Length: 519
Image (cartoon, rainbow, N blue to C red):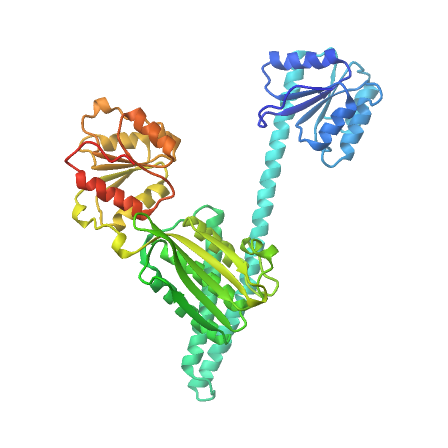
């Protein structure tokens, strides 16, 4: 029979096994009196305890020696036989203190042997010592695993570099020899054709290096976009022109259609270009004769813009439904793909999701495969407000995340505003509100520190005319209520058009009212 309830998993979990209920209760009282916090489970049946131990993680076992049917030595023997329990430390608590019992316990793998009657401070001190040692052991195991994973990753990267870079570099070397022969008039191949092939192979090598660098940034959490407004059709055309030599070298035709030319996207142009290059390169490897790229505008509104679906298809063997998700895993390769790092689609997925979009694979059986990239923050040029008349207005961005602050500022700078400053802590926000206040304060509420911040309005008769609260609605209501402010709420993720239109509305009223639009 087990007593006690499992509590916070961060507490050490201890199982005590003793056929005498009074002994179980004594240990429970001792640990409580000594203020030793743990998740203590008490068993007066050894078989039930063994069944629990075999299927649950435990930090320590306190074990009685003399028990009917299954004694302490047999319990310890079974624990050492099972892989899931063999590392659990065991302390014997026994009235049998003869040397032969103590030596046998240690020989079988017990970590300690405490005689009965139990002395409270000794029991607690030894338990605490074992728990701390086990915690350090786990930390050491985690560190060793991280080192092994790092070494494995290093070996994989070196393998990729040595294998995948060899092919384009060898091709460049061979083509340069052909080019030398052509210059000497000893080759029938034209120099423009050879130069195009060199450019194509150079781009293959460069893309591999870019993917490896981005992989490192992803692993370290440093892959961050530098966003701006850019025309989508120009980006698509540029990527197709870059890929044209490689497609032509494989004898593959390509076509492109766009339903709404002239669209603007707010995002990192170079990152999104890398996604298109990676997916186009993947399609060209599997296509038999044709690659297609189609752009379709979806769910567009005048107030918030829309999303764009870019579908890149090929007429190759297709992707089995069971593989359509796994192709985006790190180092994943399709069976028909003879070379490549297996990083292109993985990195593309990270970049698209960083832009709050989606990417997925589809297949039409033997008619080929398609990769669909859905990008958010798509607008027409006419939708974007003109803010150049407000270039003199001052705006403050308050966010504990420098990356978020940079993103919030970047949209405003792209929109034509130049007097934008940042505050990354509550004291910095307080300092920025002293003296001449900004016209608009934009507060990022994703940080609990800022969400719970109390602005001393009584000490500041002049505060920003308007407040925009970026984040969850409940935090926005709490911040506005706590500080007695009327504010504009802007939910995440950041929509550049909605943000700029909020700013435009509020700037129109600066100097005429001390309140802001409530959304």
